[in-house]
Image (cartoon, rainbow, N blue to C red):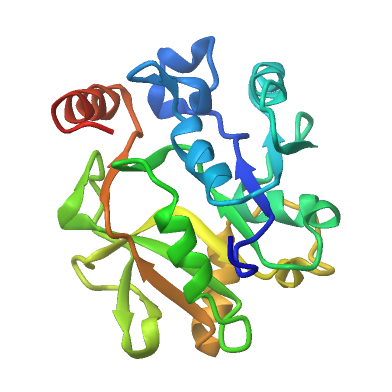
Length: 241
């Protein structure tokens, strides 16, 4: 496996999953089953296949269930970033986990969307395209016209050099953040552990021309609510996962 592939990944599993209620009243969203497999495992399985050896998993809501689930993983080291007493969002979670991340680039992934067919190639492509001298983060981007369960207007335009521009006041944009990225942990050096979104970091990087995008060459399934879950299960049943 190429040395460009990170050995460490941060798995964001602390969300409340409010849009998935009532299913998340007793089960955390990352463990909701999609065709018999936990939602987070649709992403973690190919991540490990890509060569990742170390998972940092943040926990908050129904944390014990997440911890028990990832403790069953073999062939990979699992560390828990415990957020039981706080709500930090996607940026604050990385600030808190910074001492665990190491110095080399890491993958960061949400646990509410995945691609099909499942395979490690999108991770490998993202890592191999990442140029740490010219960029600080590279986001995996889903084509909104090749997706299911995403009802937003899109997040980004892709500009020359694969640089990203926010949708801003435009009515729509062709690319949505697909929930996976590669980044330099140094972005969070000295950042206060408080509640904030990763978007705060991205805004600064966009202004510097150091946030890049990587188109996802797969169909993208966003599982945000019970209807999207039913649609994803039907899609996989028809097309395979």
